[in-house]
Image 1: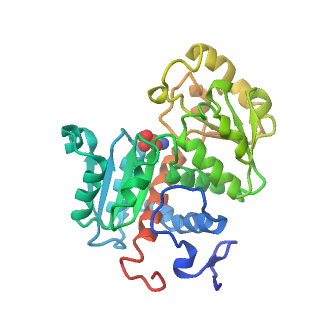
Image 2 (image 1 turned 180 degrees about the vertical axis):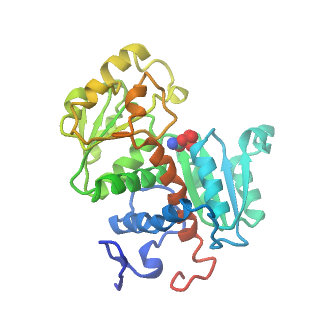
Length: 330
Ligand code: CP
């Protein structure tokens, strides 16, 4: 396999061998060099996004459909901005205003979107596996913007890019992910991403919010947050996903905060320069205190949002290279 030289310490296979996938449905199964390639490609867009004029013509003439069957602020807007900054026509479909409300099936919706000749479809759906179902029915690349409790791959990529920028090489870092792991697609994608890149991942939460299958992942499991924090380079907090809970998983938000909330006192148990992350939206005063979330010496939460646009630009660019006839992308 030929390797391409880049300005980064990493080398990647050339052309489409660098990322030989038609869709981005999850992080599971990606090779470390494929993840690193996506992150490396995103860096050029970080630079562009800081300029006063942010336009590139990479996706001129292409149509991107964002089909969101669940609410979103960050993911929807950043995919829209990403497509528009690269010159694509971007159309947003919100389930609440669509014919889904009239009883149209997911597969009929997918076939309808396909007939409109989109060049990429970005999908968020409340059911795990729904995005795969749509990907099997359409002719263009599909990007998973979060499906149920399954995966949220671009979130994990933007988190990895943020960590790389703040900490350098991810390999060898200790990353603690704390909260509602059971219902979190962010946790799942991050566990795949960070362990593939060589981080030591600790997963922490109340036993009721830790999935039984967690012991199949290459992670250390904690139920005591103070113990998990000791020596952590990165602390990634998760939202309690009340909308996915069927019944009570915690005694009360107050008790949850007492045991698992990231307070300034608790953060002091991690390394002095520990990075604090949260995918948003945050429940301030429940899983994270405001003085920690807003402490720019530790918190990378707004940088995560910034990296989201760059990562999504890179993903749209790479997945449409074949249809655009980019040399080496057959
Ligand atoms: N992190 C995340 O997916 O946020 P949104 O739900 O606002 O898109």
